[in-house]
Amino acid sequence: MKADDFKLKIELVPSTVWFSSVYQILKKNKKEERWKEIKRELFKREGRRCWICGKENLRLEAHEFWEYDDANHIQRLVAIHHLCALCHKIKHVGFWLHTQEGLSRLKEEGLTPQDLIDHFCRVNSCTPEDYEKAEEQAFETWRKRSRHKWKQDFGVWL
Ligand SMILES: [Zn+2]
Ligand SMILES: [Zn+2]
Image 1: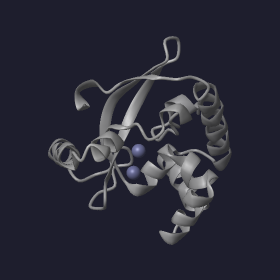
Image 2: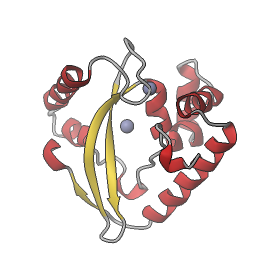
Image 3: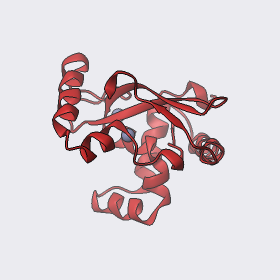
């Protein structure tokens, strides 16, 4: 199976736009109320389930989905959905599996790197080798995109 067909994809945010998400900006400007409103809207629209794997009745984290215009270096926010903690960690696997802080926080939560990889394979019906390939590809794209500054388009969210 090609990585593009996976239901749960790794999507690493270029380092040049780290800490510049809707969540971070609202927090910085003391507008947490707006973030809570975004989450309330998600619960209303999508119920209490993970938008990717469908798991229900667990803590949900809102994740920002971006599209990249690689020709013009525009990062565009196209959606926000609620994800379970495991799907969400796969989205940010660069942090969770490839930084000291991520790995120690993972341990604090009682999880191992293998738990994340197993979840990826279960949701995508794929093998650990497929995971390795998808991760490699995601890092290659991340390295290329991190060489550029990006203009951000927050759409209707900011
Ligand atoms: Zn999930
Ligand atoms: Zn996220």
